[in-house]
Image (cartoon, rainbow, N blue to C red):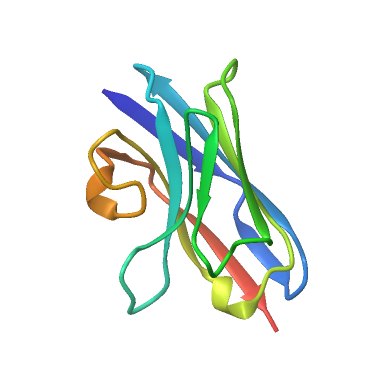
Length: 119
């Protein structure tokens, strides 16, 4: 089993920055990622980190950076140049099923952290 705990969400003005953290406990998981879900929308892929390679959705590429501290078993999402459309609940995920950018590719999920970007 893997437990994931997110932190770092909040309210920020457009153009601002936030850093999300996700601390993992339990067994080692080699692929970790971030998804988000806006009200009334499906959960969508944001970024993932797997064996030193990073993956991003087109909507956040160039603005968000995912990184991992193996010693702390923690993954981070640095979010810069935030836009109102980035407003969502952000979920940390871990897993190894096929599909890096899809919900079905992940077995474990955090409880989510709210990010609100005001215009």
